[in-house]
Image: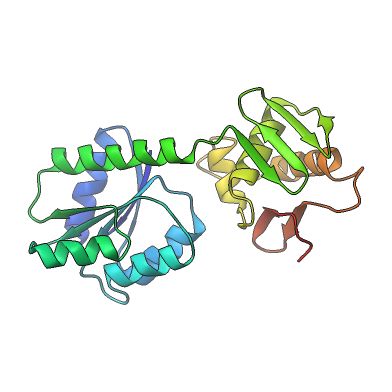
Length: 226
């Protein structure tokens, strides 16, 4: 599980990061709401832990901005404000859970893991479709316009990840971490090679390409030609 901690108190953020690491989870940290929003938009996190009172952009405004961009990552709101109205505001802004300070880390961890399980359940789709391209996760098959497309295992994982994020720009870092399980850049052209092979198999024989390069940003798979 990968968690983004958005907390301006460096000691509190370090405490959360250390606890998550000891529990076997990875985490990134942002010290203000603006940076937290940028990181949440640029990366694929399983859960966000967001403090309500943040500099630059407060926690609830950050969450509202994410939801307006249709990012459905589960969010746990942390706050010293414990009144019912405060909790309601946090949930209505788009938070999925609300935990008041001070808190026990064991409870926070249990809530974060529950949110991650809920995300995994909600995200599971047996079949992904983009235009006339179809990927079946259960039968491990791909076809376009009814014609079978034979992919190698890594190519299948790459296409599955792209189709799960259809319409969104997927960065090289996201691909390295989620398709190759690299948490560093190996400084090779492995992504370019696999993208080229994948494009040859799903686009070359068809009039309308689905897999596009976004220069300086990454790749996107979509049915439209924009």
